Image (tube, rainbow, N blue to C red; front, top):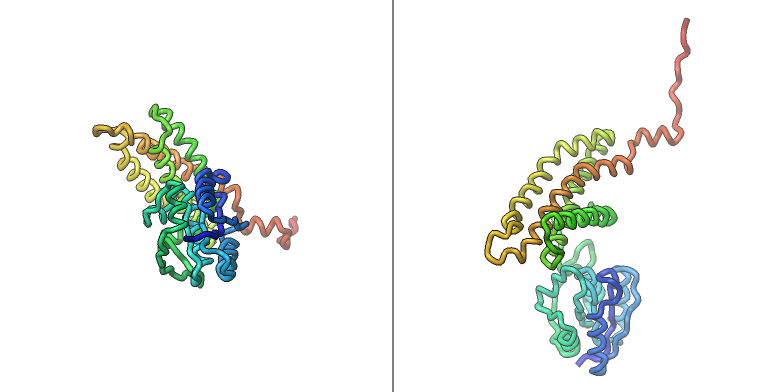
Amino acid sequence: MRRNFALVFNQSAGAGRPRKLDRVVTHLERRGARVTALQTSSAADASVKVATVARSGTYDAVIAAGGDGTIRAVAAGAAGTSLAVGIVPLGTGNVMRHEIGLSTRARLIAHTLLEGPEIPVRGGVVNGAPFFLMAGAGFDGRIVALLNQKSKRLFGRLASALVMLALLLWRSTLNIFSMIGLVMLMGLVTKNAILLVDFANQARKAGATVADALLQAGLIRLRPIMMTTAAMVFGMLPLALALNEGGEIQAPMGRAIIGGVITSTLLTLVVVPVIYSLLVRDKRAVASAGGGSAMPVPADRD
């Protein structure tokens, strides 16, 4: 039985320290275990501190309390050592928890941490660093690489506010199914905006002005954005209309997605270009504003 645990807690995976984590720690301490929290400032810092803990040999296991990103950071630090990694799922998706069938009940999680079997896991190597869980390649990897977290939060909140309006118009409630629709919208809204901004950036690199780049991006990217919107709207329409028996329960998910996709398309085609034009300036305008050499003006001749 394991008795000594190090704890890595990702505070961004929830609002403050969740009650589930407190209950798990309480169950562990009732059975005589000791839990020591590691103070970490980032995923990289967590990996470094877990690696240090693994070399010290002081702890029987390290607990990753958070989402899939926290698990990856802790597992990367423990890779190549004998230190076991336990999981307390606190994130939004918790893909790893679903894959291994881990319980969500605090008592069962504590029992697994104390007496559960150790399962060897072979990870990969990406850019020279250990990697676990999932990786994106090709178009998906490019989208993630270009993703701006501040823009994602901004447009995600705008889309969420408009989803609430759509639910109000449909006279639907905010429940677990409409929340699932909100989670689906986050990725879709961001990818549409990135498609537009990425093409505008490429056009500017080719020498186009900001205005010309936005016009080209709007004309060329309009079709794929509208195709994505239409596919989502018509795909979710049967669910939103609740045509089958008992469909009223899941209808809010379809209604949230339809309302969010339509309004986010307007945001992508109108709001994103406006913000882009305000934040990005032409290189020639910046150069002239920086005090470059003035062109000689010929004198007037009589």
